[in-house]
Length: 445
Image (cartoon, rainbow, N blue to C red):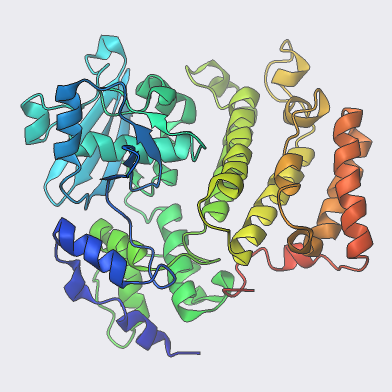
């Protein structure tokens, strides 16, 4: 194993200076994708589709000539942005973007005056819409709310895809706190204490560099994380970098995008598992506080079920629509997340919210599994090779037994049972192998 300090030194501060578009493109050619996952810029592919930093494709067919020219000019500048924060208000929300000058993008209802997204940059002030900040921001939002799809999204003249619908409604349905975590930014006005999501991601990055399980990395730093009065911790380079990552958004963004994806860091399936857990936590808060039942966008059964269904559909889409074959660690992460979500839903076979509601609107298990066959999770598991699912057979079999006990449509039970039986025949003796590696194993396990 290489020395941790040597691994940290690979991240040179000198390369933080802005680069030109041609330099950026040349660097991406020179650096192998196995060594770096630096975020790409907007581009137009050979079929005329706009390809975004989130690797989504957009059709420009709905745009008039002036708007198409605005889009073309906007994406000529490399998108070296940092999403500094977001905030929800009455009928509108705003996002703070720096590059390094700070701009504000606002979107809201028609009554708020921001039915059409606006930006405070020079292009926005001149009415040259959409500007590059709006294009970049709504690409980031689309990647979380809708995810990858087989066909290109259709870009509207306002800089967001038609499939997103009204951006404010989409953000409100998603919930700004869930979106902020998914986009790795803070909500403006939150506590000055370290954001738990930032702390978790920092630990995952540093653990990945040190090639140790996440839960075992520097418990002295993460048992009670603090930014510290001073950035520098003499005699402790790792703690110094830890404090810098917590304090400085630009450094965190640079550090994160400089690292390659692996099982510990930038694991999109693990991120989707965190989102699923956050949705379930939101449902629990709703269950514990009756006052939350009367808010405009409650975190109720329907909301939580929609989030979990989106998580699973995004996993399915990544497996089937990614241009390259997924690596073995990615397939393991997909399996782990799918089984984790299925297990948690099975545990939620209880009523939540007003008792006058239909059962599918007050029981999460009944909504997703018990009342009708939605192929929930099973379609994802059927898309993963048996040799990847094998180590998870005991966990999956235990979940299957609970589903049979709770009750579910015969077709759903039959497909899940056939999958479990097939895996059991190939892997008859497993001792909770899936769960054992589910908490941050070494890269490439």
